[in-house]
Length: 328
Image 1 (cartoon, rainbow, N blue to C red):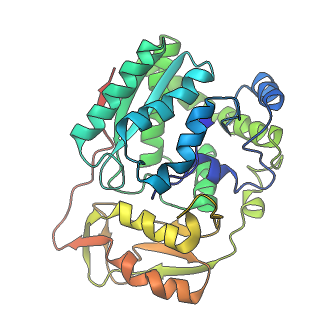
Image 2: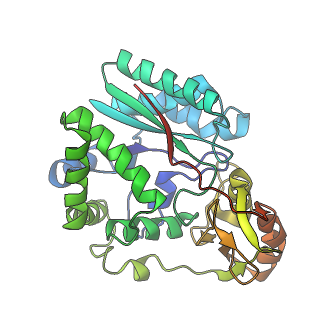
């Protein structure tokens, strides 16, 4: 899997993997090939000779105001996938106030663009439009999200939004690549998750790329957070009606969890955990989330801003959908 770094208010997969001590997200080509051959998978960034034009464009999109350019998004995503030799591709296209695609129409336009170009290049491809009006899992921030992923692989996130959407994406790729029915695809996913095969594969990949050999059993040691931890409470009781997800992301950048310019270093320790969902019942004794900051001053600077990201209704609110459409 060829991944990218954070853009705008969104986190980057490579930045999250960089929070694992020793993990090399930029291996040389020989190492990459060796890991894929021996382990079967590798999550890395593009090498200098893989879609080199995209690497240059990607590095400046933040600072020249083209993060949300549809043609650049399409070319950036697909150039790396096509160059790496993929045969089958499933794209998770986000929609909502936390996405660059603020409306379903924009998400559809991007999905059709991606699928059309991918199929034109000879790939089997489909896009699944999924909700981003709130945090996908329960956390945001590099170490926190990596810890949540490990908990997920250890079957500690059952029936969560994270599990449901992940299963939907993986089932889609199995249905295309192995010509399975959806029922058979989900059965196969459940099997490798419940018997620990998926978790074991992840641990082998991490170790093969320079990370710890015991990331599953000792992730609390390897992914230890050094930050001030504070709960943030609503000012009244009720139900979470709306979350300003994009604003939460921008606040996280303010705390050091993202880049304002290319040369900025990311603080892997800061972030949010146990983030409330739309439809959750909250009160003045149940926190909206737990925030991890570098200092007391940072906490005081963002406390009210984070409170304001959550709109609380007086009456019960329905949960948001997980997925909206499949484009193929």
